[in-house]
Length: 421
Image 1 (cartoon, rainbow, N blue to C red):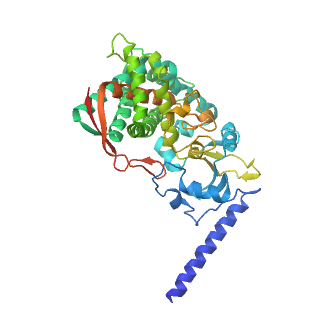
Image 2: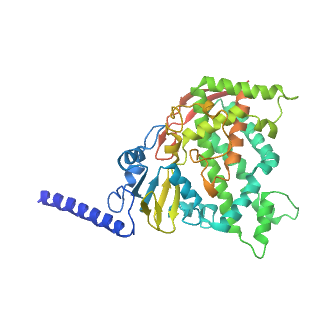
Image 3: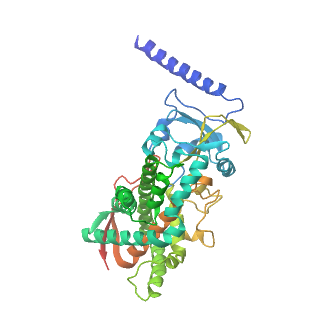
């Protein structure tokens, strides 16, 4: 009897899988990319989220690239997905933002950030909100108020770490990034009650909220602030932790960084002064290290879009309503684009544009959705390196293991012993 039950169960699973895949095929008027939608309901979700501990292309993606090529279909978290690892296809997808594709996240992700947040908006509304944020974190504002706040926050936190003696870098850099922009949300209510004019981002938000023909309301403003806090906290702290691991593992890189930052100190009248905008822009090797870190970090496992209509590409059809996932790690770790791609080698960036993305460098996204916080993240990492290297002695004492599931995780942290020079 049990044999019959097992056979019947297996038959039902196979039948359900066949019906599921056939239904998906019928929804497409053209030829679907090769691939598999996996099991009914769960698709290939379990394998997609299986943890791995490699500085390499995700095994889920590598396995399917070997079998199907640079464009393939799958299904996870209840969505039909076309995965693109092709630079030209990726570029086409980003160029078609708002025409053939829109930014797409899961419902749970949208609920976290808010239905009216930047990640949920499109077209003119997205452009409007993006321009609003750039007035906070764009180069002009970074030169003034934000640069001072970043320097002050960095010095304050490093001093606190030194007093503790030993700290987990992932934990304390998370606290640093939250502290940096946390003041925005804390003073929002106070500013609403104030009659004193302020020429800053919050004042700009409040002016927009008060307009009669407003696009921005208070709910969107709160979501906007939360998005800034979350994005900075989750991505920059991970990058900073990996940055410390890399330069600790590569003393030749640390030596070059020390040389660059001590040169900056010697050029000052007061070597205890804060970083100026000119000094920041002169940190060429520092920016090479930052680029190499985020290239290998691949903190964002995929960039997601949704097809607004059937889209023809490379002889295949991406059906309307399907999700497209661009995988930056495939490009960042490609041996045809980068010599010895798994090696940490900042010198590979010598002579290259250090402040722009491309079809083979997408650490900060791509197209009109290029990360608006890229400049502030890079400034924060540069400030952190400057004060850490010039004012403190430090050594890694334990931790540093990395797991991706598929995002970057430090399961046992990264601990350093730190003291003032």
